[in-house]
Length: 411
Image (cartoon, rainbow, N blue to C red; front, side, top):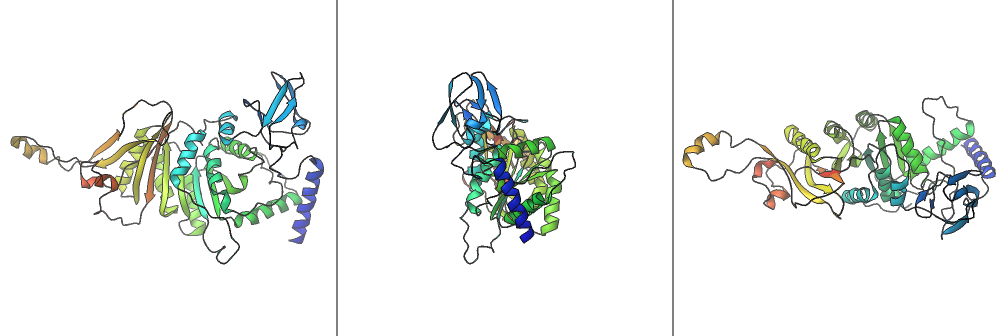
């Protein structure tokens, strides 16, 4: 271990000589690799020593920004003598202004989804029992842009100890053989040891290699990679990832799962075995019909999921518009006696209920469906919350319906 530490120290020393203008991850200063906001409208490319960026007001010298205090608005001069203001973007600005391969889940929707998970983390203590409780683990399937991934990481970061004051490991290059030097291998080992002691982690999985790598680069460029240590990035199929983790661990481990995937109804049943009892499942879809398919599948296969709510997200809705999405048996209506015999044969046929509780025109947004995993043998005799409120026609409707989220976007 001493050899590894020595190698890492030499690596850090070399990095410090190459970039002497700012201490490693001094969040009170602008640092190399950060994206900063110019005049509140332009998100600059990642800062790099010796680099200049051409803009309509002239060249912007990165060296005039790197190492400067970020605690107040910095004013710099462009090559044309125009005064420009520089400051850190908010997470909302960062998401909306950053380059993208896919449409992001915009910040207001991402923050709302995180709030629906009702995440509570506790600062790590070094006292008795600090290492015995299992970590909080959340699956984010469909990394996409990385917006929701960062919002989830922000919610759980306080549970973890301070990351090592070391550079982040170099990202491997796609489709290229990468030679790892001894100091780099030692650095990766130190980070691996720190990650093993985390009390909360976001597992994000993206099937598209290009999107997954772009999302990780984006996360690293937000405030010196503030949330990168709390995220494990994975490239591949989410079903295969879940199967591999279950084979390695032998038990359920996910406290929550958020899926933003095409054909999500084909994937969430595969994720279910990895979810602990009482874990929340959030499905984010572009249309309500996708959530209807999920609810019908839950009903048909008797999956241990209890619907909590289905919500439509859109412009002008602060807390989502609630939808009733449910498979149910309609209650018999009053009808002429002569027709009762012919209608009795259809009395037990189930129908799909799918309707908003409030009728209003909305623009943008999406749908989220929220379910909670129950025990393998749910109490079928107990009416659901929706039934208790009298919102549906029959007690035989099964568990509460789907959730809604609007988003043609990827995280």
